[in-house]
Image (cartoon, rainbow, N blue to C red; front, side, top):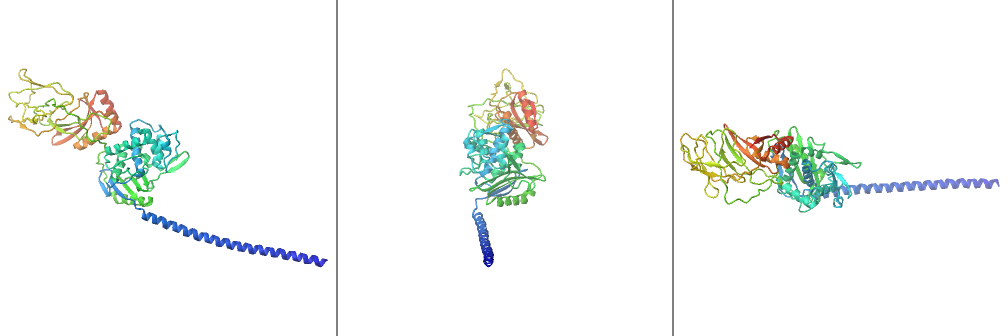
Length: 542
């Protein structure tokens, strides 16, 4: 019996040992299988990852959207580098620069404020793919919309801006195109506010560089949003897509863009050591390649940029409009004393004021002599009388419909006095005035010689006050300042008449930049607003 118990214990012991051995064998086998399986997965993962990288590299290598680039000196306007600068390209999200330009214009004019709520439509909320996930029926403050467009390049925020300012995205796109052409971006057409793919939405590198300069010149306060590195919206931090911000010295904006058709686009502004350039890269094969190309362009050309600002502000312009001319214009002669020292040239526009963007002052100029005393008035004058004098040649006033004006070689120092029996009254028309040309006095009376035929200067009659914003050595420079002032203070100057007045002081010519068409109160108020916008300004009684 005892023997049986011992054999039973030994059998149990052997069974337990055997079971443990079997479990150990199974565990070893399982571990080995798992190891082989992990090795298999690891090998295949590495192979797949390598294949994916090779495939991606091949795709990048095969992807070659049409490219273009330009580097412009912002201080002079000189082109420092260009490759296909005028070739048509798709702007992608560079479109949003113009969307914000339009918004900044409304802010600058006081039509909206940064905290103004913008309504969100269903169409705006449906925009893909980059967005703020705005909800239809809600609102977003103007400032948040700006930050969302600058950092995330949010398409829904761009459409919200378009619909609130233009009524619809389509109508806003038309306004964007008009604004582009007014700025000189003649090869740019917008059909939406976001830059989402559309075959008809085109631009050029040169046009985008122009816009990059213009938005800084006109809206320095609001342009600073383009340097925003990040934006927190509803508790979520959104980083700017522009990877050069904070990485390349002097870079302060402005915008990236990408669609499959456009490639990787970038407009960059750099202020470094007194130099200022705006560079554009269009059609990059990847974001990395685009950024690397931009770094190269900046590094290669920044030192070529000027340290002095000589380029005038970029002004808006429109095609000149023609007004019907009357069959005959009323004539008036502006005659001075014999003192030949000061000379003035008056340049005016015949176009009535409007709310359209202004054009650079493409005007016809007629010369006349003035005395050393104040210049001849531009406002409507009382009837002038021309009569023959014993010592002076007769003044001939010509009609534009008959013969050209006559240049008088000499006139008597004393003012011409009317003789009741021999006078021809000349009643000026307040809308149309012709100016005769008078030469300095000569010791001996000279014969009148015909001058070259020129269209008469046309001066709109307004109130009796003028505004002068400066005197410049060149007429083009004076016109540029007039355009810039009218663009900056558009609400006050939209209906004013800009003109230049040339004055000789010794051998030096200066061109006064002036606006006509004010009463004293309006002139003073407009002058104050010009000074707030960094323009010099004085009011002058006409």
